[in-house]
Amino acid sequence: MTAPNHQWREFKNTLMQVVTLVCAFLVVTPLVLVFYHLIRLGFTSINLAFFTQLPRAVGETGGGMANAIAGTFILLGQAAALGVPVGVLGGVFLSEYGWKNINSFLRFAADIMNGVPSIVWGLVVYSLVVVPMHGFSALAGGIVLGLMMIPLVMRTTEEVLHLVPGGYREAALALGISKWRTILLIVVRTALKGIVTGVLLALARVAGETAPLLFTAFGNRFWAHKLNEPIAALPLQIFNYAISPYDDWHRQAWAGALVLLFLVLFINISVRFLTREKWKR
Amino acid sequence: MEQKATNAALAVSNLSVFFGANEVLKSVSIDISPRAVTAIIGPSGCGKSTFLRALNRMHELNPEARMTGEIRLFGDDIYAREIQPVIVRRRVGMVFQKSNPFPTMTIYENVTVGLRLNGVRDKKILIERAEQSLRMAALWDEVKDRLHAPAISLSGGQQQRLCIARALAVQPEVLLMDEPASALDPLATSKIEDLILELKKNYTIVIVTHNMQQAARASDFTAFFYLGELVEFGPTKKIFTSPSQKRTEDYVTGRFG
Image (tube, rainbow over all chains, first blue to last red; front, top):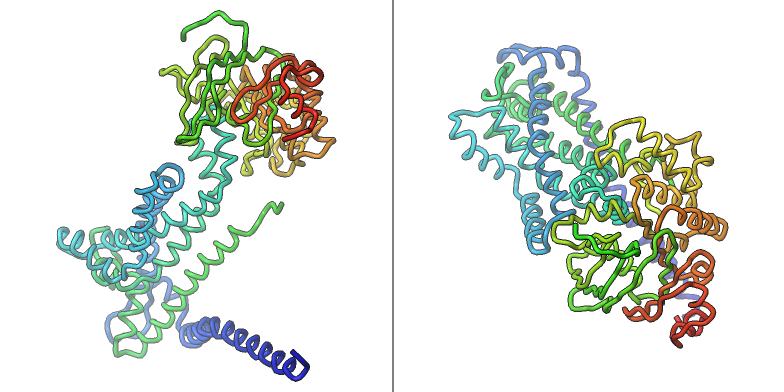
């Protein structure tokens, strides 16, 4: 090829570069928009009362979302209590024990579970927990979020355990250390950071779930004192306030969304902090 | 355990190992002398690593593995039905080609891990055994001031000696070494070889090596494996100067392999 074509090629190359660059920035644009919007509309409604007070009666302005913030943490705690042990031990089975056929079946099942729409999870737990218990409850909310965490935690645990070099397993077994101790105290310990990362990301993922909580935790304008009572949660409160006709509630919904976003952001930053290389070699 | 009169540390008779349908060791019989270094040489794929791993049942980590024959460790049948592999491995330690200190642990924790995870809690015993093992591995002077530093802060040669110390800490009777110096530079290699000569005063050592000079320098006995068979076994000097088999001579003089 000779000179005239050369320029045309250079032009095409530059054009493609620009197109991909623009697309790359388009990816982060929604994030910027979300932050801009939430801070503009939500920040002014964030004050001490928002974190410490209960919602006021309908029509009264002021009050806060203290019960919803606490409720979200209670639900996440229950979800972790269910999802972390089952998910981590399931991942240990897949990576360290397991048989080919069973493993591929379990992986496939976990991947399907990850794709099940969250509202379907809500309906399942509604019929399995809410109906027999004759009422919405914090417990049902924790269970639905925990069930959603299990496949996520299981798959990430399996993956990080696979990254632990086989040499460590051999070294431990050659010292006469039994298999379960080798797995627990050598393999899992080596991969611990990765496992914690997976757990935190799963928590961040379910922290914002709204649909499954509609049929389970239900929401509550007051403090929930027992796990068999309905409980408030940030996403539920945001939903209820956002569809209400009151301006003050709309403002509080923005504030709630901002707090929820920062909670998820905080979890993600913790993950970045954890996965930072400490001893580079 | 059933006792049988023999003066060998490891008496191997008619050992065959299969991976699936593949016979990787064919009816090997060999008596390994106590307090001596036995080198296993042979080209890649000749079964020498498999032989070594059969000596402490590490080959069983491969679910396809199967063996026939008998191995007696100071008279005890290590494949007897009631014997757990864990027990065998406590008596027959192993050092691997690639040094593998546990990355989450300090130097001290690495040396004592075999004891701690087998139930030793007494701090005094642990500290004592850590020093003793590190001294035997000729590492004590280099690490005594930083026992609580991460193990992976050590150099490659030091890491390998740490792995040797870790294996020694559980006080095995036999030490198996699978090409322990092949990933190290010449200086670190010579340190490991000096160490082997020192250790044989108290231990029975079996070492797999690709390095002819290393086998000649460091071992008392040499076994030459080829295609899963034991071709020749005898005093190292004889194997290297006047082997009785043509194949052995061709291999040790570098004509093939």
